[in-house]
Amino acid sequence: MLNNTHIRKAATYLADKSQCIVIIMHTNPDGDAVGSSLGLYGYLLDEGWRNVHVIAPEAYASFLHWMPRHESVIIADQHKDLSHSLIRDAALIFCLDFNGFSRSGDLEKTLLESGAAKIMVDHHPQPEDGFDLVFSETAASSTAELIYEFIAALGDEDRLSLQVAQCLYAGIITDTGSFSYGCNNPRTYQIVARLIEKGVDGAYIHRLIYSTYTLDRMRLLGYCLSEKLKVLEDAQAAYISLSQEELQHFNHQEGDTEGVVNYAMAIKNIHLAALFTEKDDHVKASFRSAGDVDVNKLARAHYAGGGHKNAAGGKSFQSLRDTEQAFIALINNKEKRTKEL
Ligand code: 5GP
Ligand code: MN
Image 1 (tube, helix red, strand yellow):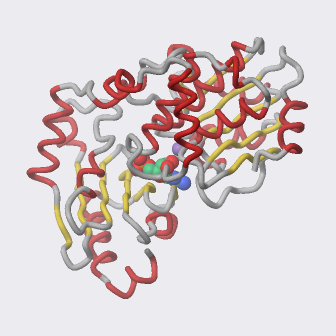
Image 2: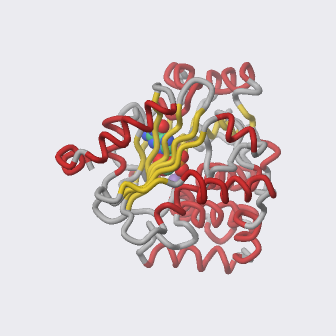
């Protein structure tokens, strides 16, 4: 990836500092989507680009709102006209932390039709065609790490600000579960070391992200673990499903179920975990796995989704109950399980 030809092409695309540049992240934005987008946004503003906009297809968790320039993010489902017209009129669009246009949700059609040059920066497997420039590196811990590499390749590492470093650091820790998976390579730690040298306070950022639960959110987690966690022993799998009624009981806010699925993975001998949450018109599925169990394959085959080998997601358009039953039947079927995971 990031070879000299790429960088020259990117520099050409970026040459005009007054052109309209849009940065788009994926639906249901996570820490890496927001961190990489605000990191790139901050860098471009610091370096003199004057007409840059960040668009999130929908709102994201409040534990990400501390990030520098969060208040500038345009939430597309709250500002439809503005988002669509910016995408239509942009000269250059960065697509961050996703590798297929459908991951931009309701923005997909406008994004496809836009005449802008499109640059993908991402670390998910199986990138799709249709982008003008692709920085795709599945070995990277996060898209935030790739934004660091991008800035460094443009020759601007020395000037990377503390605000940008904070966003990139947040992207890296959220996509690696605070350095517990997806980062077993020296490069991630070299980049993190540089971010710390820029002044990032790791303990402080960790607290902002992981220790700012509302009481409702903490009680919801307790309820999930004590009342809702089910284990399929033969399959070494565990799952939790949550109805809208249950979520409302705990005054559910965007992001409150983030991380819940990881607790199921922390049980001894569990190699696959799922969380099903009921939404207005679908059930959101979240999968995690260990080792060779490939949940990207599972999400692509059965849940119109995708992701990484050990962390993926998708949707079901059946009821919550039927989704749960279908999952149990699939996972308990040894032959299918062996073939499809
Ligand atoms: P989460 O379970 O935290 O929502 O997502 C885990 C991983 O799966 C993330 O890398 C995310 O980008 C990916 N993912 C989640 N939902 C979808 C989806 O509907 N489609 C695709 N392609 N990836 C998804
Ligand atoms: Mn990511």
